[in-house]
Image (cartoon, rainbow, N blue to C red; front, side, top):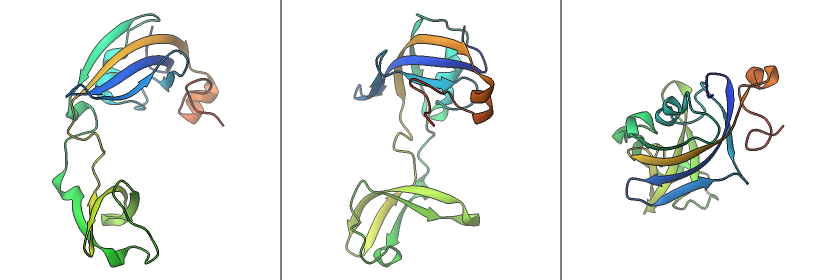
Length: 160
């Protein structure tokens, strides 16, 4: 049964609210995570507690329990001269900038308009209601090393 400090291996299908499939994982390429450590979106993690191998579940995750609401102040324009002169800036690129208090924020380039670069620091799935179809493939107690490292090792997990 899934509980805090379990290593959980899942097969899943992730869709946006409009039905568009975003991602999938299955028994051949599972996702493994350390339950109770915030490694998956909170709205999914909280409903997986108590499930066992073979259980299947349909889960709807609101933006508040997923990747958050869209934060308008994270959508901004920056002058092209703030970027290296030789950089080929184009839509879809990821860039990092130091914000208030030297906090690094990741931005996605939305486009370039003249001398301005349009940036969005929101997660690409912010504001989206997410639909997960999950199947629990394996559940086991995390090893001391996994707990120390803070993530699952092995198939579907982290490889050192």
